[in-house]
Length: 190
Image (cartoon, rainbow, N blue to C red; front, side, top):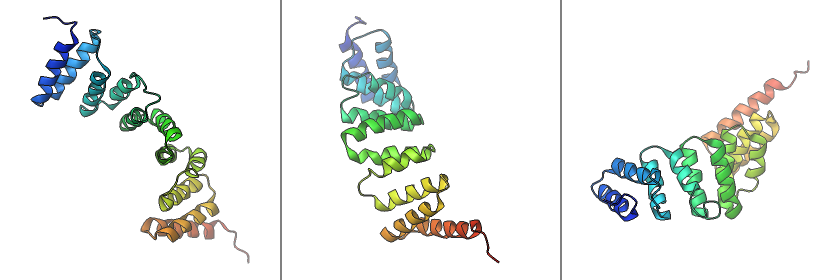
């Protein structure tokens, strides 16, 4: 055997995949990389997929981040963002989604959702203004952000906007809750 020959490693991993032995295929490619075998970009991408399949998304994200064009190819950026998100590495996921949003506006929604989830409400509101379409979802996300920032009037405006776009239990629930909060927080004049 010639352990430095990439074709041997590739064939072994390919055979293991053909018999649905993904764990062994992952071990084979990971060992090849550890042995400093010159894996191709495609091999490295397969290694990342195998990591993700085995429930190790952070390793998958790192593997993708080391590929050529990892910071310029939109597909690779989105793949990294997804892997970081599955790994619950929120800051890295947000960073990657922001990179993706610079190339394609549709990814502003992904950025905004994670920012709201992570309590970055002020920044989320800025990003939510860049989201196209999704009017109801954007209004509901803004409702939550304004509520968390204790801007109850703005939250109520957004909840009503969401309900006007597409009436929903969630929007109606927010309207009812925020209206009750407003009544309680107003001083009673006697």
